[in-house]
Structure formats: C-alpha cells, structure tokens
Image (cartoon, rainbow, N blue to C red; front, top):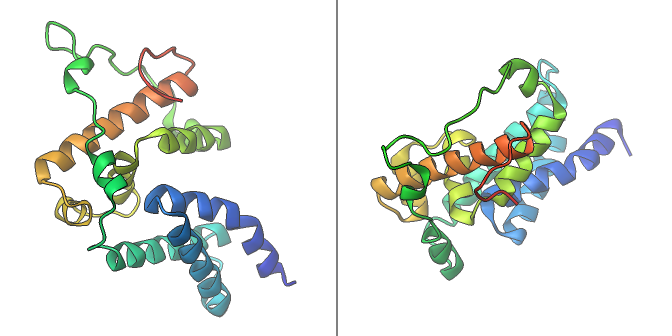
Length: 191
C-alpha cells in the first residue's frame, strides 16, 4: 500500500459523511466516494502540493457530487417530497413585537473557532440533524455554490420555497451551533 493509498483510505469515512449529507442516498454516496478515490489515484501526478491532500480530494468529491446530482435531476423520491414539506412555521422565530425571539449571541473570534477541529465536529453534527431537503438545499448553496435557480431545479421547488428553506436551515444551524458550541441552552431542535 502506497502512502497515497493509506491517506485516501484514512479519508474515506470523512468523504462518505460529506457525500451522505449532500446526496441522502447510501448507494450514491458510496459511488461518488469510490469515483473520487479512483480519480485521486489516477490524477496523483497532477497533485502539485500547493494545497493539502485532503483539500484536493474534497475538491474532487465536490465535482463528483455535482455530477451525481445532475445525473439524478429527474429522479424524485417520495421520501424527498415528504422531507421538502417538513418545514416548521416561521412564526415561532419571532416575538410579539416582530423581533427575533432568540437573537444570535456573539460568536467570539471567528478565526479561532474556524481553526478548531471541535467546531467542525459540531458543525457536522448540526448539519446531520437538519431535515433532508433543508440540509441538501443549504449544502447546494454554501458548499456546491449552486445559484437559486439551480437549487430549485434540482429539488423541484419554487424560488420562494428555496429561500424559506435556506433561511430555516441557517436558523436551525445557528440554534444548534449556539447550543452545542457556545453552550447556550436552546429551546428549539438540535439533536
């Protein structure tokens, strides 16, 4: 086993977690991770070590996930449609005066939090706790850098629904991060 093979084997669980979060399908996640590892091995000569190996491999994974999403654009599962309707009311987020019922707390120094492995573990757990299509829409926007029309097309939703889903995903992530990372007890969800 080469050094690259060992490094890729070590990365596999992280790659699978990322793929599962985005694709919400075990078989597709396994496929894109296998394709990613194969591509990394085949393109090892192209890796110029300007970035970390993990960053380079995650970049390959990102493109493989986009390819998979494009392949399955026309495929809609009943579970996915049910999940897209799994959205709570916005009214719970506001008080009687129209202000946020639970305004965000100061997050301290963002640079130090971002540098922390524990923060990313909390973020990962919070992403996994999101309902299916909320997580998928959020990851399409923030990780895969899809534009709103692309997200709408992939998920079969309207622009307004997409904006609501992105808003709710961000709010749930904020609540979860505040509860798990900042130690604030949150009255809302967060597993």
